[in-house]
Length: 254
Ligand code: 13P
Image (cartoon, rainbow, N blue to C red; front, side, top):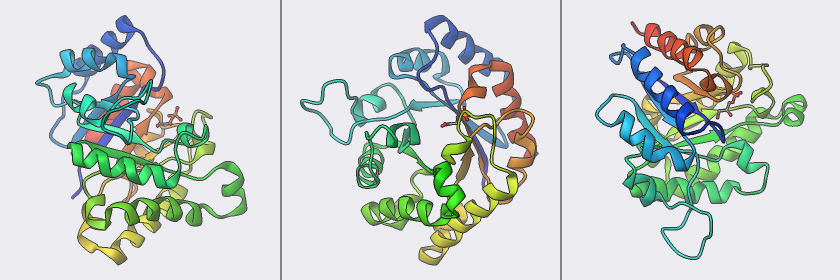
């Protein structure tokens, strides 16, 4: 059985004091590490602080993006090995907020996935359709295109070295989460596609749902058979709410 995973994507929020309070609150509030895993993706300047506070605890941390390149004249970028130096286990790649601004393409995300796993990081690879694509009824086509771009870059076996996240763009930051049934349908479709290529990878790979996950909708979402946890934005800015979501994930298998 796959363990649940709850990841905070704090995006470009916080300050040294508020980040500290969040990390300490999370440590104090999460007790059940037997049935679920937790991770926090903080802005790069706060990785040092995340490492100092979470080191030695079961809570992992990670970055929200990284360069495809190891070093060089890429002003403002952060390399995979820099994230590793700060103890990161995870890195988010392909988030729609970066795709939409033209920072990422299907192809460059495939490349990022590859350099991340080579560096020893677990990429959290985000996919999802826009509102227009959802209304057009082409969610499956869009997410499969995004997934296949990565598989063609790294091969299906290597997919298992990361985590997938389905985040419909229309559900991000809107307070309008996808219905558990919609999210389940998409995740089951994606897992089924992977299964045709490699049944073992399909069985073991974690697929998260992201988009307006809150303490009061997490239980229904996490009870779906193919939803292995959540990638949580806004609700991770409130320590109590995020801790409550972690507790829901722990209970699902408890
Ligand atoms: P919200 O939880 O704020 O909708 O954000 C989701 C997200 O983008 C996580 O990566």
